[in-house]
Length: 370
View 1 (spheres, rainbow, N blue to C red):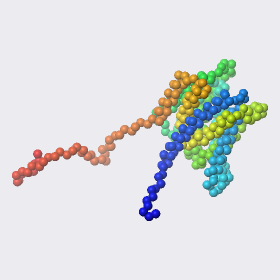
View 2 (cartoon, rainbow, N blue to C red; view 1 turned 180 degrees about the vertical axis):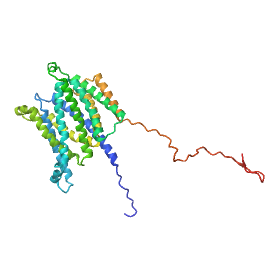
View 3 (cartoon, rainbow, N blue to C red; view 1 turned 135 degrees about the vertical axis):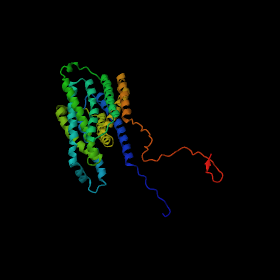
């Protein structure tokens, strides 16, 4: 209408949206990881009905559920695409970019096998401490592959975080420790240490490589990325079932020990793929390490009420270290306000002028002031 004034639509800066998504994804990861740890422990200890489910089959089912969720999300996205769902899916999945995701998938599989060998040859306490070195390897690969700048204060905070997480994990291990003196004679500590160090390098490289693909690779939705990941995850998971639990599956079936709690674990685990992908896209692997550390502490505190977990002095010390690391990593020094350089500026006298009244003199004399 004439005379009416319409206000322009307010646009939210892209940077602000990405910052919000970063913190939302990190908070979601803390709660999702905490929930997963608690439900998984409950499913293995209290809700098994005398028959334990096979974790290898649970991994395959979680990847299948993730695939179904991702396909559904992609179908919803393709409703606005003229090419249609099948053509859109074909263009996105059968792409050279998909092959790149085979690298982290294979590395995670190698990592899981290395950790299995490490656990078989190391004391649990040594394993828990050395495996936290993955925090430092992640930082190293973030600098090498992504060119990320880490200040000296942030570097110190990462070492503190490593020590804090190790302390918290050790306190949990002392709570669930079992006698393994008979098995310790067959252990090879040197082999176990080599395997856990290789697993730390594999974990750091795979995580940063995946982050590089999400941030610097072809721009596709998180649903498509999870379809690609779940295809590799299901394939490698089935290989793990055959390699580790073929006889058990052949004897008691694929779904042995499954109940409502186990299916809940599978659903939560499937959702973790989307949360982790969001963290990789909007945050980074280092912040993911901090979120994981916070979730470990949170799940331990809740375990006091659910599983009779006892908080020890070592656990409290670890919490203090993790809190200190979080503070130091996010700490930024305030810039000092300095006077501008004199070059290129005109110096202005800010002193108030002094009033000097003029006194008239006789003709022929000069003008004087008092």
